[in-house]
Image 1 (cartoon, rainbow over the protein chains, first blue to last red):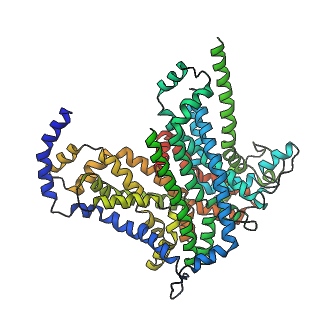
Image 2: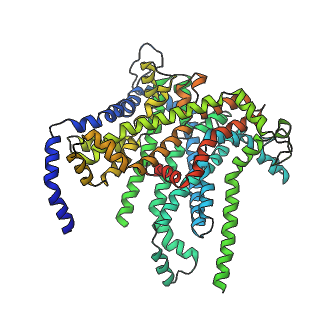
Image 3: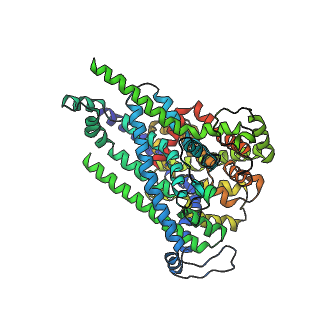
Length: 310
Length: 278
């Protein structure tokens, strides 16, 4: 306390001179100018732009555009493809989030429950996070090949004839979910490992003294409650990431067969960059953005509540 | 006695479960290498074999490099990811320094904008940014791949948090030595922030090396393709005909980051875990 007070009293005159010298200058503004300009040009401007555009009939290359109010939204809500796409996106999120969060937590707990080979396991489970998803999607496609693929080959060994996973209307979306979980589990594992390491060891000892002898009791009484904020966080992050699913869909199914794996960003991409219906695609982007911001809002709400209990 | 028996039993179960999971995780990588090493006769066989009878990896790699200009695409990947990272640092560091250490009117508003910007997913602004690049006449160029990402609000946020922990004395001492505010950013703050810059660099390079969405939208020309785009085109041209070469191409695209990761695992995990903060 007195130490820091001493530092401050020594520092004040120095600071004052430094500031007197820099106050009239425009230095801070010069330092932030490039960032601010680019931010307005590439982020905030386009954000306002996408909202404005969603109220117009603009098509790329068209000489003019006119304000059409909510017409894009009316068209969207009347379009079956939009609802299929939204439903598929929610199904994808609804499967990948619990799948990848549970897998990430289970792997982290297993790794942390012993001491041997920790870093080897961590490395292995983290590999899919690093690997270029497009390249690995192509590998998965071959593994899921109906005739020469590994998956159906293994199924054949045990007497099951596997379906054409990515070409089947009832399986395509779920095959994409499996790839999504495979890719995201390791990322969640790392976040959970960080959370587990930060739990004080004494709490486990105290719980044991208080009679929590089984591993399950210790998990229920110590690990799970203390991991709650991390879990919330991982759930929301996974939700936001899986809402953005696009790469695997675009390269493996193009949303097919018959729209069975069509998802929101893919619909937006098709409308905006293949049909060049910029206005309509902007309306889809606004819907997407709303969902993402909603998830973020939930996160900060839960984070506040967590902080109150802590 | 029973306690230690229980512990050793658990450690066996732990390894069994973790190995089972590891097999699932590694399978696509193993199968990629295995298929890339097989001649077509073995690829198109319903018999399951991990180790090929005839080792054809070099033939498949040669075919892949002959059919697609892979060197060029890898070079494009390097050019684009490095340019993005360097420009991100050039733009973000001065702003982060001003936000962390200088007092000026509008500082809090600017920081609020930065925090808000982190929430915006890149897909949401893709259409207007595309139209802007179209207006500027720079679609289908390196500039189109790099320019939209030169601003990283996340990078500004990250560096600002780091700079706040740099002692003011260090900055004041530099001022007394007559170093300008611009000089302080590069000669005092940057050296102090190397760990944070490294972590951010790994995060940035991995994200943009693997990015598919944006190159897909802005590129037309073959010679500008980035590695993920190259694999996707290779797949569209070759799937169903030459899986061996396709898997070899996938291997080539995945390899640089995976090799780098194996050499500096801890740094990579830290860098990628940053996305968690985002």
